[in-house]
Image (cartoon, rainbow, N blue to C red):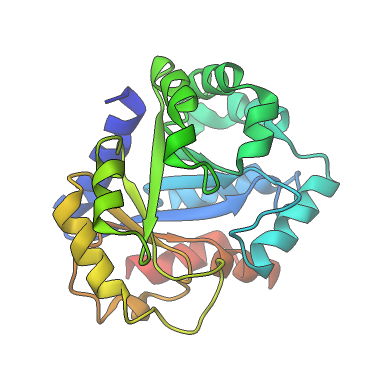
Amino acid sequence: MAEGGKRLRERIEKASGEGRRALIPFLPAGFPHTEIFWDHVRELDRSGADIIEIGVPFSDPVADGEAVEEASQQSLAQGVDLDWIFSGLADVREEIGAELVLMGYVNPFLQYGWDRLARKMGECRVSGLIVPDLPLEESAGLERALRENGASLIRLVGVNTSQERMRRYAEHAEGFVYFVSVLGTTGGDGGLSPELAQGLRQAAETFHAPLALGFGLSRPEQLEGITERVDAVVFGSALIRHIRDGGRPAEFIARWRD
């Protein structure tokens, strides 16, 4: 396992040892403004985020709902790209105690180049990469480049993933496994699907890596009926809306730590 994957796993296991789920907030890079984005990252870190997921803006974010899509378009309009992200990380990384993960779509990463991307991630101690639209069958080149630079490719599964395919993903799982809680795009608030419990049970039986639940999470109360294994929670759209409405990142994190 790459060193980044070990760091991610250890951070989640540390939270479990404290009797809680690890917290993984997501923000698109540059949101809401490039001048204050890194201040928000620092605030999330100080407020108790275990892992911070930074979104790489893309013009066609097919897995994202309205809140993330609008935020991404806003960031693109400000000129945010991978070079901007890595330049900022070079300045602030030593101030941030949380582990960092990038999330984005395959086109910007492919255009940037697998090796260049992985090298920059290693230089900035970014532990993992999430690419929702990259199939397992096409991921070997990127996975190899990341491992050579100490980072891990984070796998996504969901309620519609068969156990057979989960077993295939399990052969490559590092850091944590991102379990998508709903069918469709991010940002919904209509409750979690009835198929979720079965999917989580199958994932718990299949993966030794920690499970992080994301998509559609907006408030801690949604987890009250979940008795299946969930080691970490990812929230993005609700955090984006909170900041857009004038709220502070620390206020949002506090809801999940209480």
